[in-house]
Every structure is written in C-alpha cells, then in structure tokens.
Amino acid sequence: MISKENHQPVPFQHGEVVLSSGIENFKQVFDDLKNGDHLYITSFSYSVDKELNQLLVEKIDYINDIRVIFNVFNYDQKERARINHLIKKTLEINPYIQFFYSNTNHSKIISNGRRIYIGSANATGNTRNNFESGVIIKEIEPIRQIEKSVFKYAHLGTVPYFTDPIGPVIATFLLIYQEAEKEISSVRDIYRWASEGKSITEEDLPKDTYDVSDYVGRFNNFFKTINDQLKEFVERRCLFDDDSKMILNYLLDEIENKIDRLANISYQMGSETNSFFDFIEDYRNAREEVKSFFWRTSILLEGKNYLLQEELLFDKFQTILDCLYYLRVQWINTFFATEFIEFQSEFSIFSWLEAPELSRKYIERFISL
Image (cartoon, rainbow, N blue to C red; front, side, top):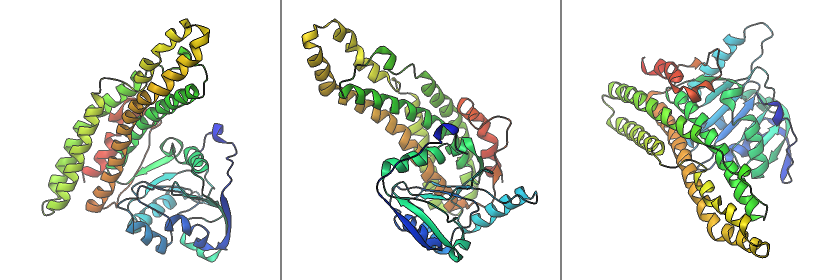
C-alpha cells in the first residue's frame, strides 16, 4: 500500500495523546470537518459508527472526497466474500465512500487534512467496546506528508472498488493531476531556491512537459465521448426529476468545457518559468560587481508574476478535480450506489494515464444498467 521510499519518520511538534473508550479516540476529527475538507481513513475492517456516519452524511455536500483503505481477515480463505459483504453493507449506510482494498494494511488513520488521528482504534462500530489509544496531530505539514505517503496514490497501491460511473473518471483524471502536481512542485522549488539566492542553471529548469499536455488532450477526447453516454443515461433515468437532470447536465457540460479549455491552452506547465529564466545567460555575462543585484532584482520584481501564471494553470487542474468529486456526490444523490466493481487488470491502473479508454468498461458497467 505504501511505497518503501515513504518508510521514513514524520516529525511533528503539536499534537496530543488520546486515551479513551471507542470513538472518542478519533471523534474530534469528524467533529472538526469543515467546508472543503476531505476524509481519509485506513482501518483493518470498516463499519463506521452510526453517530459518526450521520455527522458525515450531514456534511456530504462539501466533504466530497471520502477514501477508505481497508483490510479483512482471511484465515479461512473467504477474503472475497468478506470484502463484498463489507462494501455492500457500507453502501446501504453511506454510498459516498471510495473503497480501496489492501491485504497488507493494519494501520488505523483518520484525517480531514487539518487533524489526523493515528492509533489503535479501527473505524468500526465495535471500537465503542474497547479501550483505545492514539495521537491527534494538528500540524498541516506532517499531515500532508502522511496523506501523501498513505492516501495520495491509493489507486496505484491498492485494489480500487468503483461504485458509480464517475469514480473511474476521477481515477483517470487524478493520474493527470498528479503529474501536473509534480511539475508545479518542481517549479515552486526553483523560485524558492532563486529567492534564497541560490544559483539556478539550465539543468534545474523544467524539462519538456509535453507529456502532461498530451495526457490532457487524450482525456479531453475521451471525456467528450463518455460524457455523451452519461448524459443519455441521465435523460433516461430522470424522466420525472427535472431538478436532478438540470444539476447533472450542468455539471457535465461545465466539466467538459473546463477540460476542453485546459487542453487548448497554448502554453505548458513550466513554460512560463523557462521563459522567465532566459535571463540566466545575461546574468552570466554580467560584471561580477552587479551579478547579485541583477539576480535579486529579476527574482523580486518579476519572478512572482511568472510563478503566479504557473499557479493559475495548476489551479485549472485543481478546479476540474474538485468539480468531478462534486459531480460524483450529486450523481449518487440522484441514482444512489448499490453496485460495485473491482478493478481487475494485468496492467496497473497507471496505464489509464496513457490510455484513458481503458477505464470505459468500469464506467459503462453502471450506465448500462
């Protein structure tokens, strides 16, 4: 589930040890959910307490990204039956969860992005009967590191279970988003190093990011075709529900337009940075006495504007992803989620990055019903 390169300590300074019975061990993570948060959970089993589930359902309109990485007992070779029972039972209570199965998971983590619980308590109703202990961390950077190691690439390190047609679309775009995120992270580092006075060379600058643009172009073509099928399904199933039809069609059209605009932007991630650092050659040719002034002036006066352009481009990826998560909630609000399908392939789900068409069968599984 977690790659070996992420097996490293994550230091933190602000947190508290919790010693309590049952859900009180991690209840504050649920109580603290706010607009724009997510909820990520790892648990050996999963059957969240009814009280906490009710709290979650009440906030579902703005907690759109709920991921559960779970495991089950397999001492009697009935692993698949237990997985199916767990997912089916959970969908009856909370259909919004994205499920990821990992037969190596034994961790118990619950995070909303601002508070994270790590301890002994599973996210199950049975934990009410137990004495549990754990730690609540309230520092953003350690939480970000933990989420990146455990949850960020859940589609790649576990077995995803899809419960609706939007889930596979999200999984496909998420792969592109993660590539864009790597690029913007690299760009931010370059500007930070430069602002700290460190020398930047051509080797440090963003390499050709054509791949990200190419992935967006392929996804754009794919989404146009799958969107027609999604809208046909909405038309068939919402004969007497004009409000739901209007909401879903609006979101589908808006997402298609945003993807199309992103695919047709004339510049790529990193191109603004490369353009800005064209002054490196002039810097090299400058007299030693003015080099420091030349460097600092360029970075301080112009660098922020170029970085802002890069951030605005990345924001377009973020907006599309947020819209897809919101679409998924609205889709489930309308059609519910009672069926599920396990990702099965000889290839990693990462292959969807190059060939989004491979996700089609998982999407059509739900709109052909």
